[in-house]
Amino acid sequence: MRLYAIGDIHGQLDQLHAAHERVFRDGGRDALIVHVGDLIDRGPDSRGVVDYLMTGRDDGRNWVVTRGNHDRFLPKFLADPGWIDPGLSNLLGWVRHPGLGAAATLASYGLDPELPEARLHAEALRAVPPGHARFLAGLPLWFLHPLALVVHAGIRPGVDLQDQAEDDLVWIRKPFLESRAAHGPLVVHGHTALSRPTHHGNRLNIDGGAGHGRPLAAVVIEPGAVHLLTDGGRQPLLPE
Image (cartoon, rainbow, N blue to C red):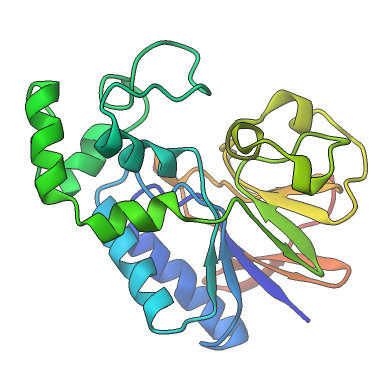
């Protein structure tokens, strides 16, 4: 039994292809691959990432994609350009926030992010395929496997999975990251970018920072073992 997982993608289509190839070499083209979300923003080809993963789904590939906080921004903007994610620490929306990477996503759809917001919204409604918005908005918040629970940001410690709040699942940091409690299954997550994937015993952070120019991580999880997949083969990820 094995499970493959890929970290936050952030518009890095070439890196996503490369990560999938590392998985295919290790486990074959029918391997179960779970992606921790944040498909879009910051990187150069958010549209291409969404297209690629949608095509894989439609072709029956054994891929699961969970929803990240960034995956909420585009569909919410299309539905209501004034919407502000409650997880943000300021009152700036997706388009105006300097650190979220909306400009790169909009540019990948052929839009000029410098347009006035009202016009930008109107142009986005024409440029973004409705299926892309539905795909992002409909991504599951978590995936439970016998080897791990895969979720974008983490979980609220001590709360049953069925009672977890969406905002926690896509945004949580400190209460989850600082907890040493056993959560039952190993929690595989992203959201908090590190220099490399790190195994903390009760959780495995696989956001290697692709949204900040670092490699996109792919790992394989097996009973009692976790390995990082590299071009040179497996590297063990031991609990720290």
